[in-house]
Image (cartoon, rainbow, N blue to C red; front, side, top):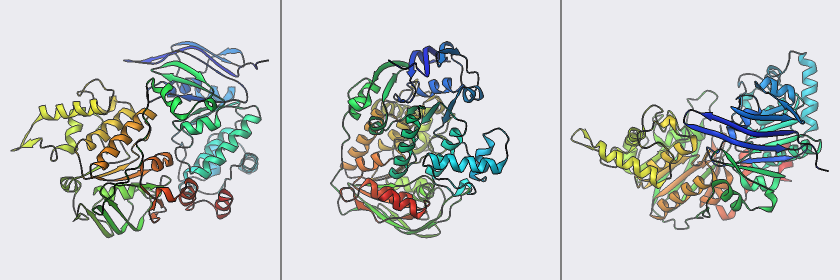
Length: 511
């Protein structure tokens, strides 16, 4: 006998000005089920889970909980029903301790009793926590444990997880999956959103696939391949990743020697003694958990933070340590920072203006003090076409694009300048499988033509699929780069997590 669904959505519709985000969507989640919600950028996933969690109200349709029709006017009402959610971007106060952050989300109670309950719940689900450690001193995996335990203390029957492994090492991912398995065996349900399709295949019992705001398919992930899941998501054939370039030459595009940088970020990470090189025809990948010096390294390479405290940076055979960002670009280098709005693009400028920001010199758009705006507009149009950017034309403002489409635009703007050196941080952060494959292919083509590329990424699947050599940044130090064929994801994961995990946890993860 089929169990009664814990959650049922019937004919859910939600529209925003100019956008039908959810169109007549049905969804069922049964007790004890790990259910994947899949779809490309803009498919309607985030809107749908916000409706379930009470952060948005549907325009029409019905929500049933344990068979009864309910309204969920706000997140507090969702939590009262038994619905908890862990968002992709954590909502923790860094200057407070684990215990204090947990207490903020719960009704007032004795902190001593809460400590006991917190520690017991953490032990029961294999989520090691230290109540008195400050959040700023924790790894991303430890921060996620706080979010999950905070949810579990509210005794949810349904836990919604949005991209939960995007900042985790392989070892932390294994711990999370073990915890989710325990929750499912207790009869709790998990609604799981992820772009990592191999994880979905391994973990989830069923999947609902959205495309263009509509439910287009349901499947059992274990009976699919990652490739077939991707094709269901985007509705067309997905080309396989291009693989490694294997054409590196002796010519060095980027040489970093004994680089030391003092962070200007609150709770940032100083860089000390970092050395590496990037050759023509190769992609060097730098893996690491967020907050281990990636931002500081990227800013030092682009020139945004000025001269380093010590060491040298050579780009295209020129010492650039004292050069400004545009001077480095004139040499033939381009940069794609992690922060899209405010750093890579200006939100209230249109795409033509944003195209001009970094391409003026290299593309020859300025002559005798005059800007060739017609040429810039053609260039912006080429970016939209070549990189399949969904936008209302070149006059669209940057902030009108979805995150994934803006990322495609920014990467395209830099690659179409045909640089000799590409430095990119999180190239496919938040983009769907089809867009990620397209970006990887364009990077590979650029490198095959003789450029060198440095890819800084938290996504190990991306690092291993794209890069010829891999190094790991941890607490501001860089491991020696190793050929991709001679290092495993487990080894990389241990290097990534070694900075902040307890020694016994590292030993256990590597056992």
